[in-house]
Image (tube, rainbow, N blue to C red; front, top):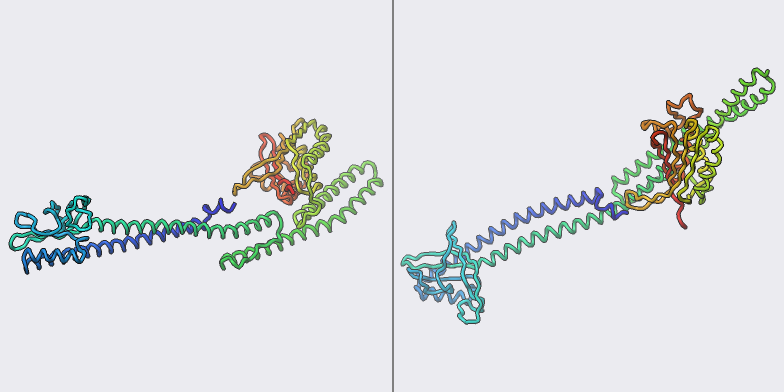
Length: 478
């Protein structure tokens, strides 16, 4: 799960971009070094050839052809013949001395430089004429000089070693770039992996908090950077304030419900006693008041139940339950009510998923769903309850298995812009106000139970009618 997100993480992309920029900067720096090196190396070759050319000229001026031959012999002893090639020629460019076989055909460039190709021997001594010596065509760079008596001197050097040095430097640059990028990518992946582990832990805590466990806090890890630690501390402080506010609201609601339920119960009981004492023509009015009291008591009971469910920290009473059996009981319970409205209620269970939850809570939430479907569907309508097991992959490419329940009807739907508000306490859709009795707590109770079971609830359009979708995770196989 973490591996799949390493290369998509901001940390890796930032590190990779930094390494790429750093590599480019290093490349530019090395290119400048290479340009300086190339210039220095070319200048050194120029100075060396010019120095050798001056040496040959000086030897000729001192001792003529014999002096030049002596200079060449001295160069052989120094080993310069492995690098330099010489030739002294007369006015007609006929060879007088040197290790070039003939005066070359060259191309002259700016600054007096000459470039030409020539066959040379690869035996131990450049002047060797042994038949076993292997010759090859080589590139040369050099300079020439015409003496006062018309003789010609040329001093040249292999161009292959220049090319070899250039290729060596370029190779070092390219390899250095590749090594920098590869090592930087590996370092970025390792850094991202460590960071993603910490982010995954924080996300896990946040998910638990979102699922209703407001007592949980994000651990302050000393390995995190100071700015991240400060962010976590502030986030935990925000959760403390939020929890205090929500608990305050719940306490107020709970206290109001508790305080009002007792006098309402007394009022309801006194009204029931009064119904036997009033005149017959007033009994209907008393019964209406009893119904109003019952409605208020049901509202307070639902409000208290929602508060208890939302504030539940431990899941006492949770165990493995058969979703198909519970749904079948709910449908069987409401079949008579559907028949009274000449409605058809259909139940389809394509599998028998086992959930980990509270049987009574699940039964209550599904009772409310079916009751709402029957209540908001006209006479002769159709209600369909279906159950199946769904396997989907989350954003981390991990398989998630859960039970999916649909409660469909072809009655009154809920506008798309009102569906999110429908789960708020006491919220009622304008189209249903005054037409169907209710207190606006049914869906709030269902949502509280679903969230307690780590599930999701969504309201969809059934075209026509409403489709309620419940997704509840399956029990783990122990």
